[in-house]
Image (cartoon, rainbow, N blue to C red; front, side, top):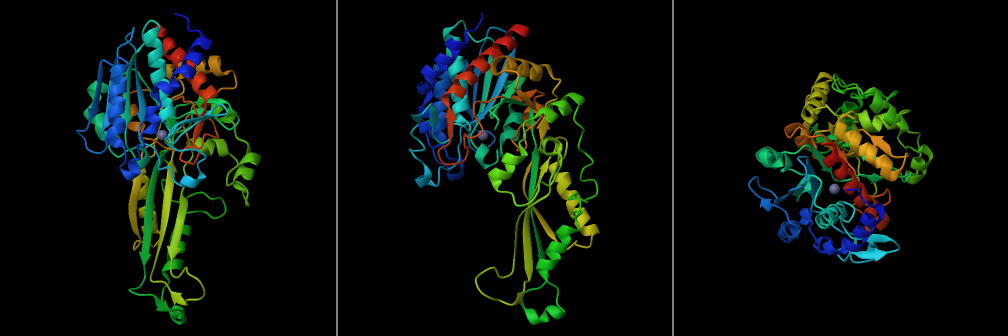
Length: 448
Ligand SMILES: [Zn+2]
């Protein structure tokens, strides 16, 4: 069956409101609000759409995962990843409409979570509905919709591991993705990892009169000395032994795609009001396949008004590393700890906060190639390939445990404002994204 683009796009626009209750449920994982109601709504909606199976998994703890399965006209199976939780809507006075009352205005649809990522799941449901009325699904579909992505996806690995059998598929379509700041559609095939941690040092039992700085050690200086010992001040390179060792080079095709990625240095400088030059001459490659050591915050001693002449007894810093595929978060933290000790700072206390693995599907994978070919067809030749995003997500269990190629092909655009007030999508992107998905599934069903 040949898909009619106008018809599919119009169908998406005519039917998004069928699923608008999804946006009305304030499913805020950080505040433990609306989790049961929203997951119930999903289970019921999947059933109404004819799912062969629609259920909640709660056996691994945390917020329930909603799992649904649809039978299609071929043997090929696509697994979707989404999350039904959203960020808190605050600050409320910056919203022009009720965050949990979907509002259409100037071709845009405004609501908390409409970009990240309820609108995207709605588009997917709309495509299921379209195929139900037009000859059936071209492939089998499975949906894995978790409820704690916005608070760190702590149980995803456990659920994937425990339900490998039910989650078997040929490929996985992730959340996120869409159009970049140049309004070019991007096909993305992975995420970076992250490890974040606190470093703390203590040099005395109490703050000391600063006149005694003549002979007592200072925790603030000591912390700064320790952190500085990890980095070459001239090049910015991290001098931790082994820090860069596990990074794998991009393939020649990936390298070429990275060179083609949109990056506008001037607009970056303007957007953030940068007062200093960029820290690299290769921002594209660094974003995709580089690693960082970032000081997120520092604190020590007296930071209030006026004067307080003390030698602080302790100092602490929050740090994170964004990690390239194949770097292990725990190992990276361990290397840092060992280097601190080797540099004479073994008294520093290092505490892990968050660790999440990176993951990248090779560009040469046939599923990735199909995603890209269909995208070029639908969105035009300026479509970009991005080997992995600069940010993260719990992709690795899907890639590694389930052995699935993963792509991100979504419906948002650069100004959608996920996590911010007035989060929105453009309905035109919603329509295009729906057609893209329908066409992509059709291709996958035909090629099998
Ligand atoms: Zn998201």
